[in-house]
Length: 71
Image (cartoon, rainbow, N blue to C red; front, top):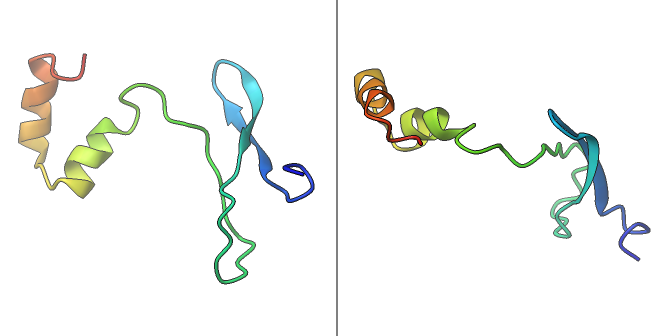
């Protein structure tokens, strides 16, 4: 049933190659141009989130990086 509804998508993973994952079962507005990406690796999106979502400036992000805040 999952496969028949088109809920299995393939994405590229840097370590494991092509992997399958579940797509969102929610279909709103009939849009078929949805793109999927693999789950981010640890801290892969951290800097973008700090800058774009939380509004941190470059200096604060650099300070956090230099103190080891990102693990």
